[in-house]
Image (cartoon, rainbow, N blue to C red; front, side, top):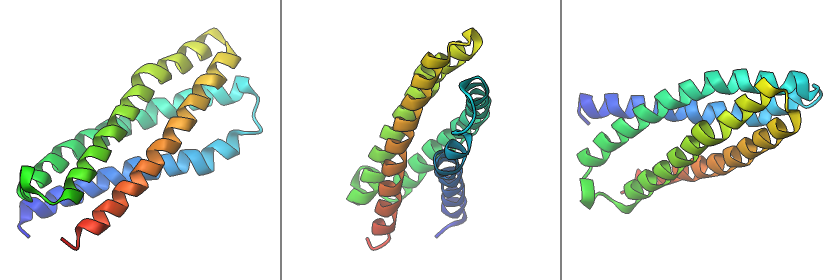
Length: 152
């Protein structure tokens, strides 16, 4: 394996670790810990956490997209094994879901917090939670697909 492929693979996996690891932390650690807080405390905290995390995910998505495209081309492009195309397709779906969360749902959270409209904010956070669960499942399937691709 040449150095460019090794560097791209390292950056790709680092981006995946940031994104998937962040979702695991937010869903399984932070969300339950915030459950006892009142909406007046919980929702502004979610807004602040999401504002920071979504910047990290946005950067990770760019790195994953660029390095994934490079790696796909290096390993055959359109003639690459099916598992690489599956990873790319799943990754694109995950990125689209993230885009929806970031640009459609998160602004609803921000508006609800600014207006102190706690029920609307809670509904928007619940939407994020459901979409994060979907992305976590897709992420685990994508990682499994990556492991499968090692045999090809």
